[in-house]
Amino acid sequence: MSAESSVSGSAGSGGNHNVVPYDYNDKKADSGKVPKFNGDPEEFSWWKPNFYSYIMGLDEELWDILEDGVGDLDLDEEGAAIDGKKHTPAQKKMY
Image 1: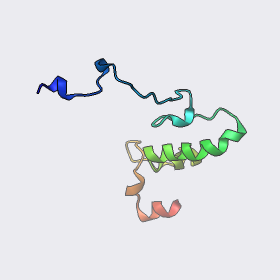
Image 2: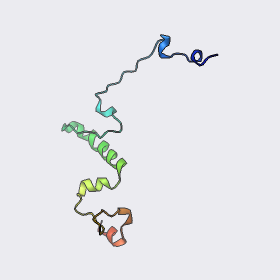
Image 3: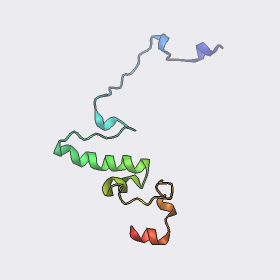
Image 4: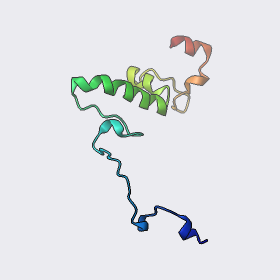
């Protein structure tokens, strides 16, 4: 038996194919993309937790930076931000 004859329902077989509708304009169906807020107050309750989840998926400390700003970052002698996981007990007490 050849490999071609063992495959049923291939594109060239002329069989009945089910079509599943998909709305490509539905922003709630976009996975892996930043949820965009369009300014509609009724959409805010959907947008905020989705945006929070997206940011937390990127980096847990990024949400704190978005809320607090970058002015409070501790910098090392080269000017690079110190990883929050490497803070000294005194630095952790500040937060």
